[in-house]
Length: 63
Image 1 (cartoon, rainbow, N blue to C red):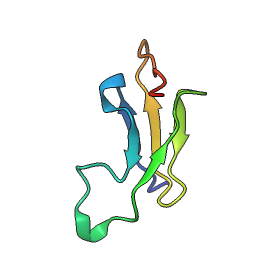
Image 2: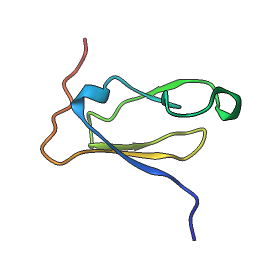
Image 3: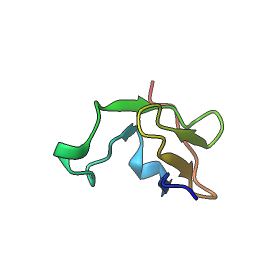
Image 4: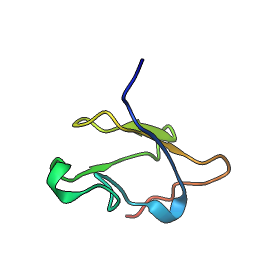
């Protein structure tokens, strides 16, 4: 049994940060930006929420 959220994102959601705007401010942790470009998935080090890039989406580097 797992309480970990898994969220599928698109390239429009980049740069990716957790918590997202959908999370209530009172229940959130400090904002952390997550690099999903290397593997197409990443987990938040604070809350463990897993983010996965939707199939066919490309994470462009924002440098």
